Image (cartoon, rainbow over all chains, first blue to last red):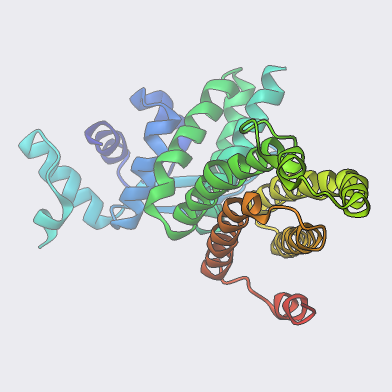
Length: 90
Length: 211
């Protein structure tokens, strides 16, 4: 999760695709998507659909950290580990 | 071949994610196309399936799918094979249609003739019970409640006919008791699963009202 938080926080408010995150973090899809789902449920990331750059391709999901997610990433970065989101935002 | 396997894995992942996570399944499918452009679709699809399996216990629909699979593969399919085994007398030396005939030992030649004449019908009914169980398991996994009701009705009709014929022919009904008992239990489980899916419709009521 730390890897994913780092990859997303480096991009700031920029949107990025799931496959790009996979390549960047080295996480497999079986690890990445459960993390993304969990982070979206916890309000750490936001997602939206984007039209594809090439015609004939399906619309793609893009992700970025929310304000709460960015704060959480900052705390995680400072501590060097991933704290519980509930503990941070309590 | 690899593409076909990968596409099958993606379809299975989509199924496992269910309606609750349909949007995530679509997101995975879109990225699958990107992975395919780089020739990594098989690994990506396998990962998506693992992700879907990991998510299943976390949402209601996933838990229902797991329960349906447990019911179908853990109870219905074994009972189907039990029916086949009982019908042809494989479960023990004195069971099934031939076991019932061996135990009958009637001295009435007319009754004995009737019992022997009924063997093909009894055998067909018992095999039909087994086949109906396989159909029920398939329909349950497809979550096709119309077919579930049909298969359940077929099982009930075949079992009732079998019991009646065994009674009329004066055969030993004790052979049927465990089989019928297991069927009642499994049909209760199937009804419970259907209710949990919230898919018991008026169609079910109509089918039951015909009994």
